[in-house]
Each structure stands twice: as structure tokens, then as C-alpha cells.
Image (cartoon, rainbow over all chains, first blue to last red; front, side):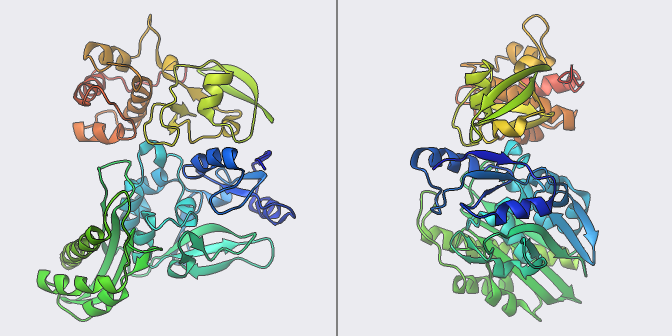
Length: 296
Length: 161
């Protein structure tokens, strides 16, 4: 089996129709930074990692409806085919969702960021996707569309269902990522620990947003990547912070609860034990720094 | 197979490609544009960097069909031996070229950086070339060369000619 045709649809409706067509499922393609190396392997063994044997490349990268950033309905709406470079440099993202701007700026290299898209980073569902913890911390929602029925929206925390598996149904694509604007800008931090400063796959990536009321914590959201089969929210840590006055000691005490939510593995980049240590340390530091920023 | 036309350094080139062929393979193997180097083939090394409609990308991660109807600029499009781009001159003067395999991509990433930021700091230069690996120079001379070219005002748009 090999890829035989390339379709660049003029609009979303046409894209969804191609995807709904009978026969082998089309390969949904945007930035290509993950898919092109996979396609080369497919040339050799005929199937992709997930066992699919697509014949058609469906290129969404130039679809106007999926590119760009705007405010709509109390949400910051980011098209799924918007590149990391555009997101990292966007003034509204930098001001209103700085955790996402920082995460997008940490992906790959400038060359990769000129191609890689936000939708691709999420749909690939790699546990180490850098934008995922940032969007989890920002309380983001994904909008999915298919040929049948209207679009549906899902909290990002429900989008990742298992290792490299998402809640996308056959024929569906991610069209937008939505970040609620109420209460923004919010103090936040994104941290990535890699084996080098650029072009690195994360050993641990994490993001945190904290809202204070007076000097106590009114809301906290913490997302983590590369420490479990899917990107996760550290809900126990968040709950432990509520109503507390955040000092470095409180942050360290609450950060210990992160182990309830992570199940790191040994791989070429780091051992499970190291990932556990780093996750706890990074979460403690982020909480302290974010709370300081929130109180400033 | 699909017919495509790419403008390489301003010159229209036509060919027929498989839909999963990468831009770097088509440039080198079908169009003879061999100043673009093929290194890792997976976006790690940056040797295959080209400007696609002025934007620096890994041509090994770009499908040739996606470049149909678009402009590709290689280091040859920036300047020639007779009329070099200030970045190319600075690379030569600073000894920023050793084996030369990274130079084409390195210079294009630098050109892209200087288009966006005409007066980068040394840290910004390092960030700008962070997608381009060099195994010879240790980068210091490359950063020196880009720094000097920036100071000499090489940000003028020469790639569009």
C-alpha cells in the first residue's frame, strides 16, 4: 500500500467530505514535522505506526478556516493549523495565555516551528507534546468537526484517552483550540526540561496557572507532559493549594502529591526515577514562581 | 505522481513527483539543486534548510507537492561567488565554514533571523540557528560571522531578486 494522491481542500467542508469518503482513511496532514518521517517508514513497510494504510494525503495546512487566532465568545480561538511560530509570536497569546506562548516557543527549532501546528501537536498525542501541559493549565477546550452532525467541544483533559490515542472519532478532525478568557491575564509558568536547550524532546514539561484572592490561592491548574501515557493534570496538587497562602514550603509540600498522577517510564532520554524527581522539583518551583507573580 | 512547478531562486522548474516525496529529495535528485544538503532526514540537523516563500523550513519535513507554485530560495539564491551575500562573506572571513555541510542551512537560517530581527543579540543568534547542527566549528565563529553581518546591515531583502 502506498500514498497515491494529494488533496489540498479549498474549505473545511470539502476536507471533511474527503475524510468521510469510503475506502482507506485519508492521512490528515498539517505541518508534517511528525508525519513526514513516519511516511518514509511507511514507504518501506506499507503501514503507519497505528497500522493504517492511507492512500490519500489530506493537507489542511493552508486551510484559512483553521489558521489564525481571534477572540470570539469569551474565548481565545486558535485554528488547529496555526503554526507554533505564529502562536509564540502572537501578541494576544503572549499577553493572555503566556504559558501557551512559552510552550509553543519551546517546540523543536525555529525551522520546525515554522511548520509544526498546534492541532498536530495535540492530535499526535505524544505524551511529551509541549503545548499539551500549557493548554491543560489554561483550561483549554478542543473543537472537533466531522462530516455528520455539528461540531462538538471537549475539555482537553478528556481528549487524550490513552497512549497516542485521542477522543477523535473516524472522520473527525480538530478544528480549533479554545482558551476561556474570563479572568485573564492569569499568572503562569511553563517549564521544559530537555537534554539540550533546543530541538529537544521533553524529559518533563509542565505548566502552571495560579489565581490568588488576597494572599491565598483561589484557583490552581497544573499540567504535566512526558511523565505518563498521556499529558495529565495534577489535580491533587491543585486541590492541596486551594485556600493556602503559598510559600516555598507550601509549594514543596503540595508538589509531593504530583506522584499520584504520574507514572513515568525509563527511555533513552531519562529514567523513570529521574523523571519523578524532576517533575516534583519543577512543579514546586513553578508554584512558587507563579504565586509570586500573581501576588505582585 | 503529480506535476509540480517550483520557482527555485526565481527560476521556474517543473517536474513530476510522488506525493510522498520530500522537497529535499526532489530538489537534489530531480532538479539538481545540490547546494541543499540532505542530513538526518527528520528535522534534527537543519542541513536541508531552504526559504519557502521567504520562511526558513526543513525541506526534509516538507512535501514537494506542498511547494507547488511557491518560491524556494537556497544559499545560491542569496548570493554567488562573484556577488556574495554579506552573510556569505562574513562566514568566509570568520572561518565559520569548515567541512561546509551545515553552511548552506546555517546561512539561510541566519538570513531568516536577520529578516525578522536586524540587530539580534548573541543569544538571539544562537536561538536563531538552534535548528542547525554544526559538528566542526563549535559555533563560536558562526555566531561571530552572523553578528558581524548583522552589524554591517545585511538584513536587506536580497532573496527576492
